[in-house]
Image: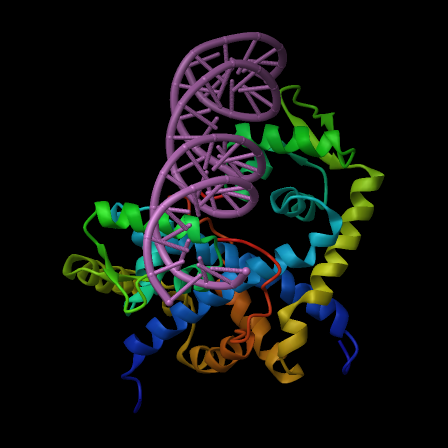
Length: 150
Length: 150
DNA sequence: TATTGTTATACTCTATAACTATA
DNA sequence: TATAGTTATAGAGTATAACAATA
């Protein structure tokens, strides 16, 4: 607790806290979208699907297998939230939100924001501090190619 | 970007970042314990199981069904990491780490800390800022009783 | 030959319901 | 009667492998 020492214990504690926050955050997300009657994984896909994107790209972004994206796309299509459109490279199919899909995306995004722990529990000053920290934490480079996890 | 205004957009952005960090954090956790050849959910259970605890309590803490705790306990017992011990109330069984279990818990805890994004990507100053924010974010009170999610 | 998406299939995680034994 | 843990079972989520079409 003196100077630069505690680093190890401090890091351990922060790691644990971060994992705890992550879990809570996940639960919070589920709760936020509960009213929309849509499974969590479909909701996440819609939220990610801002602009039309090749299925392959989604697989990368969501870090899961291409075959699973097919399954997600089927389910979303059944609900009329998404449609497949041909890419110029004829092997490629883009996934694009329908009007209904975009609308739902907006509503969910709002709900998630409103339920946000960030909004409910942090002061303005804390929010200002938090942004750059989270940005630093996010890796643009895929440092996690090793593990699967959708 | 002026004063108190942007709050909504700012919150939305922070929420998204937090969700992203949460996912990354989950992936990072999986990667950290990959070397121990133990499924993520078992690892989490061991990490939570600091002191012997009634199975019921674990169900609450992990926010999942009692029957699933039975399943976890079985798997951990098979691996010799945990044992069931009778509580004074004869209905209750405590789950306690074996020597092997404690050892593994220490090793995993170390590994998680070493791989921690907190350690790798944040400055000392940022770490100092982060702690109280994460603490504020954590709800001791169970505000999430509504949703299941193990 | 390498890549995108699909199909068929199987496995893992997790919950629900009904049961046993205490209390 | 209510509570702790167990059993049997079913469902959701996700991956692997083999395949078709295109490049």
